[in-house]
Image 1 (cartoon, rainbow, N blue to C red):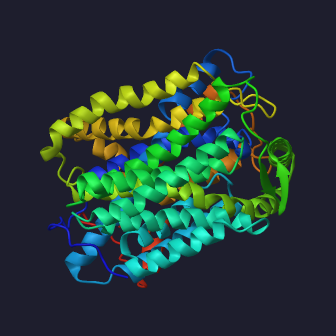
Image 2: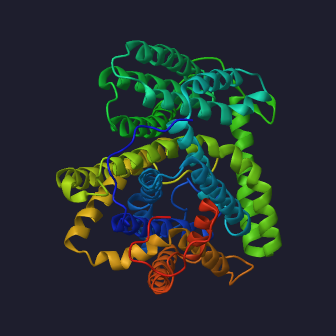
Length: 528
């Protein structure tokens, strides 16, 4: 592996703005997550719960369109920023980066697996660990190994069932390889651009044919072709000097991933009732070929069964039964993570650019851009989601989504500009109201500890093996989340006056650097 070009000199003191943003994002994440301690996690992504009225409906609507999707995106941007900060600090101090970061990823994966199994199946740490591994490949893997890996992954994707299930890993790895090649391409190399544009256009054309046939394998193929085509066009037009390729590649991955969901969902919604444009395609389910209608029915039946199982175990079962259920779902969860991790890689890359460009480390120099992001990003991002709500606010029961995939795609597509808008507004406000740092910074400095504590507290409040308060109103859930975050902010400030790191941050850092960190507090503590 080789490291990318060295960045400009980097500050060695702790960056308070990142802690503030991290604490702010943690509050939004808690507002979203609390719902799925009162609702099966299998229903996440299904929109607003049915049967809500009055204040409960209003609370659910505000969270769904002003919070949901935005704050995990902010947290993912911050994860990419943390990667860049750790890399630059390692260079400044002249210590190896990759061995420590690989241990950091491994520890994060262990935390995620334990969190998923012991506390809550909505964990995102597993996704971050897989996404961080993909990010390392995108930024550090050698070119010849990338080409070999891409060819192997593409070959795996052509295998028949039951081997076709390997697509869940093979295609995302191929995407990462293509992104890595784009990041390494040299200006003025038209051959590189054409090597991406031509196959990208052919893959996209093949995917569109499969869409007309109703194939469920078409979306992933179309995203692959679109990303390949977009990166080739970007390489041809922009050359790739400086750090600009980071945000271009990241935004392209994010927009194309959710943009195709919008296109595919919109095609099904607006052509509902039209005659079929081609023969029914088939797909692989549990190693056997079935037609698309059968595949949709089987997946819907499995989802209904899982929702019923979750609700029964978490409202009536013991802690041991809850753990056994979550462990039983772990294989399926890991199988599905690779695709989502590609989206995370895109967001991580944009986060890396935010640090390398100085937008977060020196926000005073970026006043004009921050204002534009706040005034344009927030209305645009939230407005796109609200436009989708005119079609659907939730997935209806049954196989037919009735436009929800189209609406959900718009909601997620708007989450990136809205996230930038929130971040920019907070950075601008922080310059005028520096006292905000005292509220959010301690919460953000102990983000991992507080994230896990939220799951512990909420599971004890709402599950049957705790207080059994499952099913309280949505407005009451929001009140619980805000009260918990306020308590955590106070506890974090209290803890950090006596300790240098949060308890989980201390453990994470010890495993990363293979030495016990200092416990005493320090004003110039570096980022973990």
